[in-house]
Amino acid sequence: MYGLTQNFKIWLFGLDRWKKRLLQITFDGLATPVALLLAFFMRLETTDYLYRLDTYIGVSIATLAILAVFTGRGLYNNLTRHISMETAYTITVGSAASCAVLLSGTLLLELEAPRFSTIDLCNACMRVCHCYALFHSWPWPKRS
Image (cartoon, rainbow, N blue to C red):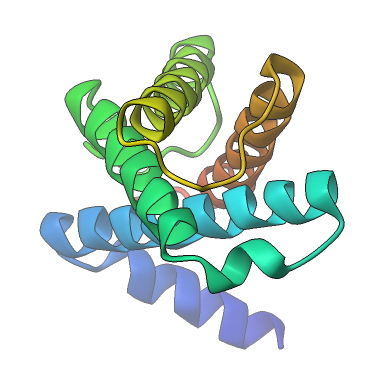
């Protein structure tokens, strides 16, 4: 099992830069909706919101917003081995911007998506930050 992990790490670091960037964007594009839908579930304790189109419009808005902020702040320029203060700040800004855009989009478009208090939005931000930190602080091997 250890050899398989080592081979995977070597293969991952051998990828071209654009493939690594695509991998990071794909992960964030999947982790953000999952974290947001789980936050909805924890708050509402029901899955009725899954049957509304407006929920998915709101999730798409939030996902696009966070990907735009992360890309704009240069988060996908390289694989990070450890989370620095600048990276943590970028994650926090991206999550907060995503929540603000989601709230604005929900109010402006009059979506029937679940609406949250500020505490619930911060909770969703923390879930996104946690998922991001788990993926991006993976103990990658040093390049020689």
